[in-house]
Image 1 (cartoon, rainbow, N blue to C red):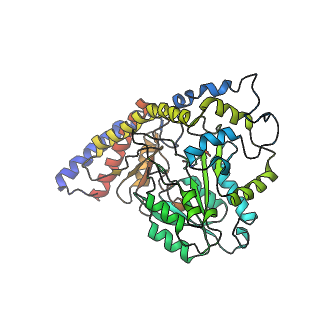
Image 2: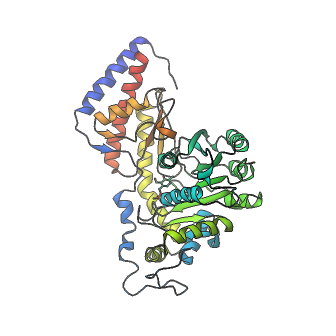
Image 3: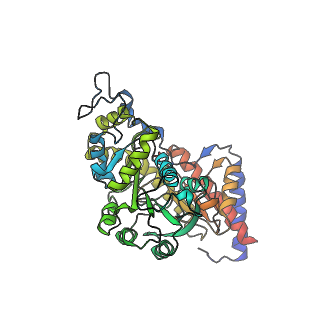
Length: 423
Ligand code: PLP
């Protein structure tokens, strides 16, 4: 990433960066690029949900009264809509509560406390358990591991998904490795989509643990930002074909399709895993919120309805991602101070700054009124050994605020980067 500079030009660049930073700090900004939340205009696209299912409608297609208890699998017509999106046959898909993160949490707790199909004992009875964490990754996955005392083993991400040589080796040699976190499409935070080869290797690799599970968090399955939607290979089918039918738990939700935190979450897996989860769920719930599920069916209608809705989401999001790319290129292109991703979907851009600079950039930005995700959050235990990765979440601020924040961020990168070079 380095570009050679003469001492004179470095002094000039540093002086300009200092001046720009002073101007920035004097502007009294209060901007937030932290969490990948939908903007109010995106939520407005689903405004109709607030008046559905409407006074007269309270039965699902098979005559179930959605106002009553029961229906642990969720409404079949909603599962049929999302079967296509999540690559899980409707009969192997459950429509459950309002959050997929909650489901991931529950699956970990259930696996700790009740034997998963194929396991010899409960995870809690084993001396040590570990998860592979493709890195950079989603901070809340890592937080779940920390919460339950699950060791995290970082595995580097590549443009095709996790480094599969490392994954295959670790999974084959260590029976304590019980799982891996995967965000297979438009990953959080670097927008990577897994290649067909990665999916095939995940499905067929040897696992030392008989109860090894892939936590396939397909959170951005329908969240395209270009005319060429990425399609990934079907891991659930590939696992079944490879004789590892129980290997994968698929998660997804409508949080970033309809209403964040008030959508519907899904779980897909093999018949044995479904039976296991349903039996465990039956102890904690007498049935999901089927009224919310019915309003989603009425609003989205079918898989084409989801696609059309996501096009409207894209129309709001794409200009923001374009602005991020444009400003980074204009302000940092050719400086040798940064590299960034150009995601084709999802919610994030990853900015890589010179080693040892990310924390300081985030600190300087905060001092100037621009809040960023803490540096390190993209890594297990909050520790980015190179201190180089910054996650940018462009969705929530207005375009004008985003542009201001991005200009400010590039000032901080120049300041910290040139200060480091001058040392
Ligand atoms: N998984 C990933 C990869 C995410 O980025 C997010 C939210 O940012 C979630 C899950 C949360 O999903 P939910 O709202 O369904 O709990």
